[in-house]
Image (cartoon, rainbow, N blue to C red; front, side, top):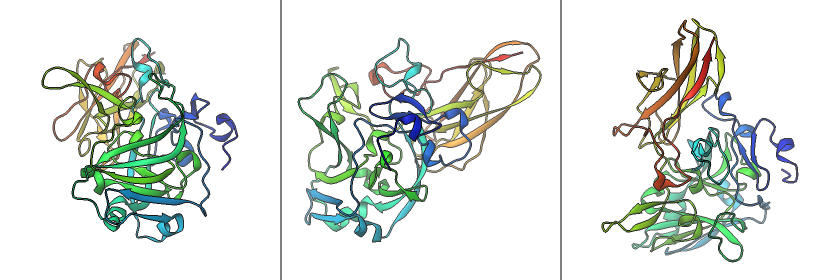
Length: 360
């Protein structure tokens, strides 16, 4: 795949959020199927996509392991594989709804998509390498690098890298296929990490190295960016790494300011995701949060994957503007908040917000 074409030519149907690097949004109002087609799957890039040769490609597994090794692309393809669905969401998805407007790509609702990922379980690679007893994190290092846009900017080019806790190893897939096809360049060819249940920044693309650590990783993409604020026991602010997706739902249809005939029946459609281990309930309000009613799910619960839902709305005969909202709850009772938590900065935008429609 060539990376020289303009986004509008190469990815017809996606919404342009940034041209350089390529950041394209899935048209969420077209949500229909459980799996997002590859050509409509959102694209989040920090730098220009590197082009890696499958014949020369090598993945290195090292760090705090007993038997470090290097493996080729073809050798990985020959290993026993798994196929799992996973929803990936940009941690800044929904940023356009923050008031006042903040810096960063102005994602609306479509910085999210779902695919079936095929690849080698991370656990199989680490079992072969032999984890050190003191291992605490696994670091994924990518081939893409450059100068970040957000302050503070580190000196020199910064390669992309993220880590996860060793407790998360069992869920992770080192993927080479996406919806049954070879992963496209913009989605990480030849290999990308897929971390179900975590925001998309953990699912590192263009993977080149897996390094086991005995101390928490403190790199730029783990602290300065893709972090949030918390307080320690003495109320001192500290920076922590973003990880698990939070409970969230969104309305795909109707669209904002859509005209709906008075007295008709309208099928409200949306999806919910995040939470541990899945979304248990979703409710819809057609009166700006005054009353709530349960929706009907279209998908069974699956760890790390969204659940589409629908609601048959008996549209009032009274004409005017109506505000629709949805809210999701997980099995632990965690429900979407009504306000954005400022400790998350410009990330983790999962509060409820209204979709205005005009009944006429």
